Image (tube, rainbow, N blue to C red; front, top):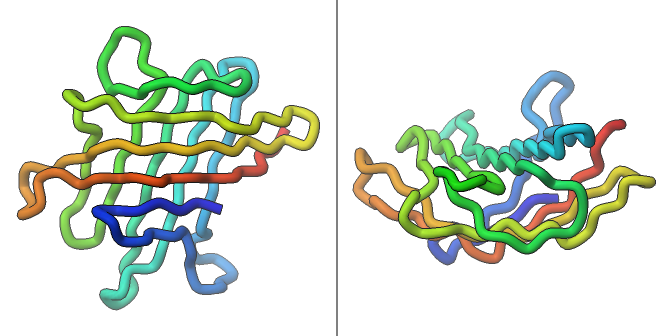
Length: 142
């Protein structure tokens, strides 16, 4: 499960059933390095195009509440968003975002969390995109 509000509008990862098409949520967790990568996908209303969120987390070994930023010192992670009409939105390096790991189960291999942040794309008409009320539940392979 992966969902958030994008400028106040619901965004839920979901794709049509398919044998070889995109899946709503994929990713991995590497316990030796504490790396979490998530890719959330949803079908756009425009033809067969898809929008995608990418979340990258670093040094995740348990429950954390921290800000994320795309520059040092020691980032906890970052988020990018790719839309079918504006290409890629990037992490706003001025505003800190938030990535909270709210549930970390290394026996059943489940990571849950919340996130929020601002993203930008200077080439689009909407320069700042506000991501709020984000949440995910992810079962990873071991």
